[in-house]
Length: 300
Ligand SMILES: Nc1ncnc2c1ncn2[C@@H]1O[C@H](COP(=O)(O)OP(=O)(O)OP(=O)(O)O)[C@@H](O)[C@H]1O
Image 1: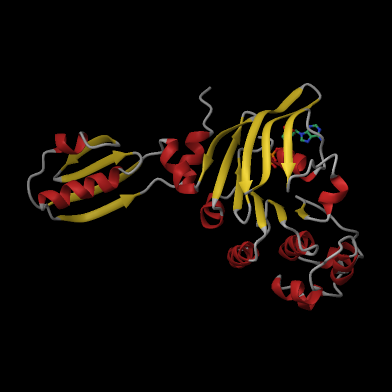
Image 2: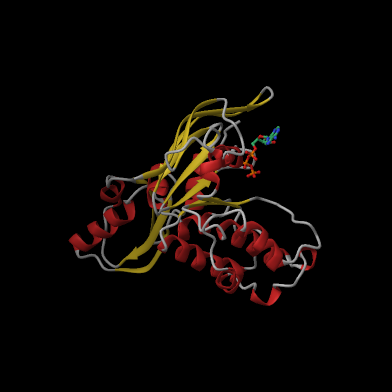
């Protein structure tokens, strides 16, 4: 069941049309990624879902509600982590959580939340004495304190060190396992690949691709390479004729095959059928990074 349905969403700031025609759906219980270059309109799209911005056109439904018209009913059912937010400098961690918890009918246990997000030792620490990573974790905890059905997380791990990022990913998986739907705005492809069940790429005011990370890679036409040294003669024309193969080069007995989609499976399948043993096998698979760049490349 879709918990978020966005169809034909349009939004302009003055004369600048930021969202032209944006449509996507998010299913209950999934982690959904929203990707796109700086200024693509990701935050604007998410803010239209959160009821923080009014769309100029199109429809937006979150948990079946109109985020602007039904703002009051929706507010207690969603959690929002705002990008680059600030709290009053003297406000302590524990106080901030209590303040936010008071806005919701069924808040989470604060102690448990502090433990989960590694903030148990900072209950009395004022906001301006927190490190960047601690602030980030506090904002996530604040987004979750209301026990939301849908959590919107914008630039989740920007200020975190590598260990902090991994720990956060584990917690997001736990949030998802508890049935919370997560919408993640991210610039990090590894994060999207590790966490998201599905993702959409926003560019030029439209969704240019949507699907599982693997589908995005397959559809983008991003290329991978497979290199090896066959121990028996191999007709490279047969490799070139395989589905997905876009190029074959042979140099000093080493063969490099370039391709898209599942070309590597096709090549290894052919080698297996022919009983050709290879050495020095090297695969550089196309990543979501490549796919993202291919999908959002603007040839001037
Ligand atoms: N309140 C506003 N008034 C005018 N222009 C705005 C406003 N908010 C955003 N914009 C502009 O709209 C465009 C889209 O901004 P938005 O923050 O939605 O993009 P984004 O994809 O989230 O970007 P980033 O990845 O850099 O966070 C940008 O050009 C931005 O400067």
